[in-house]
Length: 531
Image (cartoon, rainbow, N blue to C red):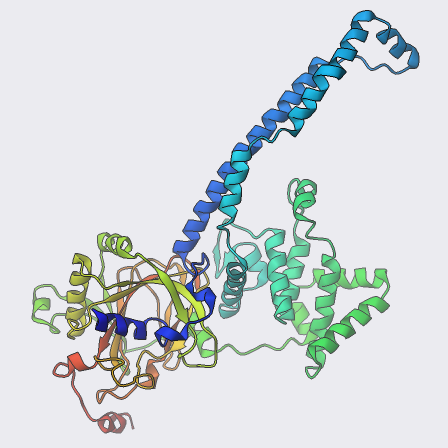
């Protein structure tokens, strides 16, 4: 057991147990998984429930006060003569004195009586578990990642159009403004200007005056901020050698010297322009997409000479129950097996996914200088269970490999906008004496345990292969050549999830248990064949 736990520590989504030291990484966050977002939705439901009860209690108080006012309703005494006539009646005079001496002090106490305190305390307790600034920042980064990776215009996202799929949700003005400010603060002035413009174009929300009195007016100073961003955008494009401080100072100087009328006309002009017209006028540089972006957008060239067939030869059992196998790539070898997990087994798996901890991406990947990021929630199936035993047997049937020396499975649930940086699964550069008694990761297998309608593909950018997740299917590839040396073509990552809950089961197949199962051909034969 200790050996297994030590190995898990090595191969979880971080390089080693002691490499994750920032205090964030030990906390549970909502943004890192759809599972966390479901918990957050339940938190908001409970808050709204308490908020509604509190509002009902307060409304009952208002109704009681109004009832008493209506009870005392009388004609207005407009003149001094009318007022004098009213109080000269002994019944009115007596009632007036008694009410002010006895009743009104009690009504005043009633108005000050704290009602709905139980609900207020419950709301305060719920808000203590609300998302913190880290969650908010990660949510903004996720939206930014979706927008840039898939080249989605701000105008489409704001109106719920994501990759030609129209959703019934649109972003309100405050959501657009928060995205604009995030991009402005990170120096992405081109996209910031697009989001400020979407915020300005928004129609006022119902009861805007009342809501703004509580939340603040999102439009206050918005037109000037849009103008400032457009000026900064133009200055940065005209002279890319200018520092950020110089550009900001020049933009402020330009706006200060302009008349209010000129600024208003400037804003109106660019509000009326489309993104394409502004880009053409300003000469906005088109940053060429990376191989990762191209693959995530589904633009890699289609493979030919690939077939689907029933695999009945890997193990003797497959002669009775062959597996549906689809070739994804020949060299390096990548295949997808269909219908590996059933619906019942997926639900069984999710019941076992406790506890879940932060899954990390960053250091020890292709660029080791980048910081660690929380990208998912993960759980390890270390203890024996019928599900784990069945799935390990199935993995053995698919790969022909021996998994008995390391039977643990890694489960992961990604968040909306979550991704995984391009990395290698092989451990050649990370292995130290005794750190991995089973040797390097010869092969990797990912089982998709959920539908992901948009995004979330597994991508191999160097060989231009994208594998779309399909519920119940699995993808398998080799990380090393036949002589067990690392194959750099196995570089892979995960595209940002646009919509859906990406559940996966990951299994690494290690070197030494396969010593008598996997061919060990000299590397030079492969090189000669390729040449």
